[in-house]
Image (cartoon, rainbow, N blue to C red):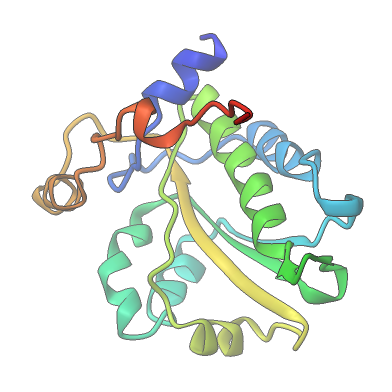
Length: 186
């Protein structure tokens, strides 16, 4: 699959088959995140990998009330919590870059996973305070996102179909609304 097909075919997966992700593929996914670019090469990302079913079930209960919408992660063979160490943050033009850097790294992991037929779902619905306490994170760490990883089921649940329809996840704005070409004015 070429890169354009990889990018255009990826979607948020919420229904997972039970088979585990082979260790060598999981390592390749993590390596893709490690190789990501970052502001001043500070590499602020930190990843917590869950691959034990019992630990994943407990994790789903520690995401707070807002995290209850993410109950589907309990069926994923792997869940990764993407964090950033603020000690590695770079601030340029009054902007913190740890979010951008970690997002780039996590997206590279998701695309690498998709290359192997492994789905993911970027999740931001969680209580950072409750989850950080459960994970016993250092004070300098911020949770950026969570994603389950696993082989997609062929048939989506009603819940998955509902979320995809509600979010209009297949809709993309026309490129003309996003891109402007600069022409110097005389």
